[in-house]
Length: 239
Image (cartoon, rainbow, N blue to C red):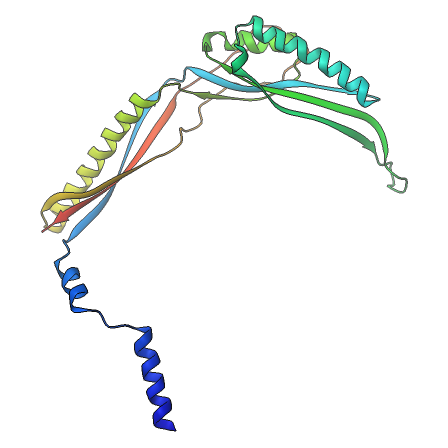
């Protein structure tokens, strides 16, 4: 009984660790020795467009009153955007909400009571002429916008900057590969593989301020620059 148990245990162990075939062992022995290096490259470019989310929020005693006021204000804002040169296909409604506002009382012993309704309508626009961005923001506030949630700058044609970053990343990997090869006393052979990862552009500076009911002057804007970053993974054969 003991012998059969031991035999079963050995069979299970052998099944868990299958023997390496001679062909697999030979293939592993013939596999080229290699070194893997990651290179990093960057290029900077000035953005040429901006994406902004803005809108109007109104409050009233009833949802109907709040909605009517919001519709009038938002129509005025969108008319102002069109007159400022924003094309219809560069405007898209991004959010619309109607929310009751409650009064819970001082001691929370009474049931909550609706005291007002808030209506918010926001639109996302693309400004393709950055020299007009400050004037566009100023005009939207003058037309009734009281919500501006942020500005995101981007480039319409990042391709050339990405190519420059790719070249820099390959050069960085080659530099490090030569350095490691010299330090380790090995020789670099042919490149066995090369792959890349393009990262998202880093955030760029933008001026933000609390929008008042009326703007005294054109909103100042700092568009800054974007950084395009590329990482490459290169495998060299060594001997």
